[in-house]
Length: 297
Image (cartoon, rainbow, N blue to C red; front, side):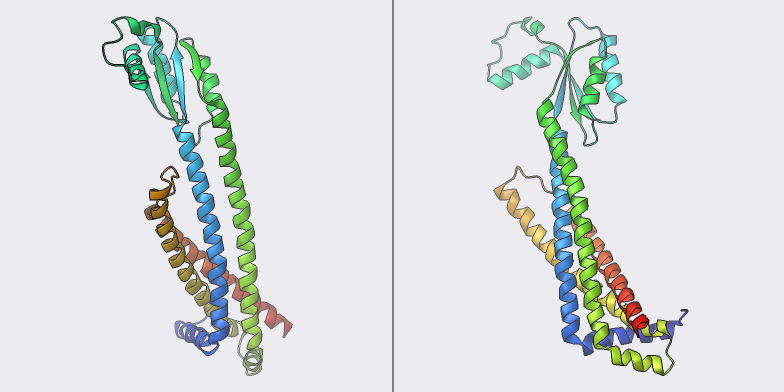
């Protein structure tokens, strides 16, 4: 199996030459890789954005921790210290009675000065807590209620549960679809390269008769499969990245409430992943195809 660099370069030239000599079959193979990776990349972007939107919805969920009347400084610090140690807490803010009254004025559009000094006493002191995507809100609420200084915990339980369910379904569904599309893509590429190898069966038989080793016969087709996978994946990455850029810019103007993953954060990763997947599928497809043909012959 050990080949010199000069022999590998010769095999690469042969693989490149095979693409040019059988341009029609090569274009069909590249087109197959292109369409397959467009589907694979499109499904990946859809799953990524569904999870991103679910995470954004979860991060916008806030928990209100209402403290008991006449709690002292130590009791307030107990709650603050407890929140600091929770992995699911993104951030928190302490809201005093005076700040709560100012918020109330802002919400209802009440002019400043309508409330008199001391009117804030009917409001509780509270913590406003923002969660991250890994948070278990129900567990956090149970822990907060166990603290002696906490009177009540308010949060949109039904909304939170629905968002968590959607997030899990999007994640699991995305993985299942990716596996199915990935398997179908590999199957299509393998069969396409097998047709290419079958079309050159006489050439392979002649090489075997004159004493060429199996690996010497395989390498040009391995390089050909790699080139087909890389060219198809580059075209798929270009079309997907341009299409995603256009879609993101359009949605910002038309539906700004839809928070997509930004083009800048996804473009480079998408390109390299598609190139890697295309090259891997081309390599595996060519290896399987040539191995089966050599065994059969």
